[in-house]
Length: 272
Image 1 (tube, rainbow, N blue to C red):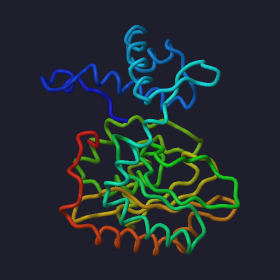
Image 2 (tube, helix red, strand yellow; image 1 turned 30 degrees about the vertical axis):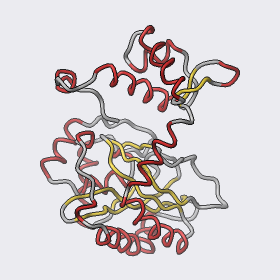
Image 3 (tube, rainbow, N blue to C red; image 1 turned 90 degrees about the vertical axis):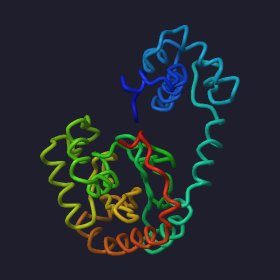
Image 4 (cartoon, one colour; image 1 turned 90 degrees about the horizontal axis):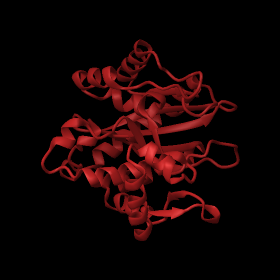
């Protein structure tokens, strides 16, 4: 997720105290479990006193809640209406939804729409396959670009200069033995996706999960990526590409053509 840079902190209109509060929320969201005040302070990079004041404020606002039996703190239910507000306002989400539902109905496998946020892809639509054991992947989850087919599809659509800047700066953490952490191999995978129009991931974030993805374009701008994934027990990557790849590309193209250029959100500095 985007981090506060020195240039941000030095801006006369940047509110550092507010940024610290956001870092606390991010720390709680990333933990996936209740955190103590000391853990919150450490994860968010603030002192314990600041953490206590921020948590008290957010708890009163419903953005933070106490954990089971009152121990620790976790993200509160109050953040969900805020996130839903984005989904309701997004033309991309509204237009993509029926196309993804049609893909889900045709193939019976999980289908997604993901959009960029910093160096992650945030999954804003998900139709989950049923009748199988699958990774827990709630709507709104953020997955690093290098570890997802959606991320590689998005990166494949970037101008060369932006891609080079991203590759030079991005940390390439391993999540499974199959995660691409070598920059040369990752760059080759992105180049292949740029040429074919479709990116792949084979167990690179969730073990046993195979995914293909293609970018959603409006003009020369990539808004995100649509993807389809299935378990290794039913699919290999070649079959996914052969059987579902053309339909996935058609859906992405139809979504992009259905969006009016004036409805496309202005690029966010968080996406750089």
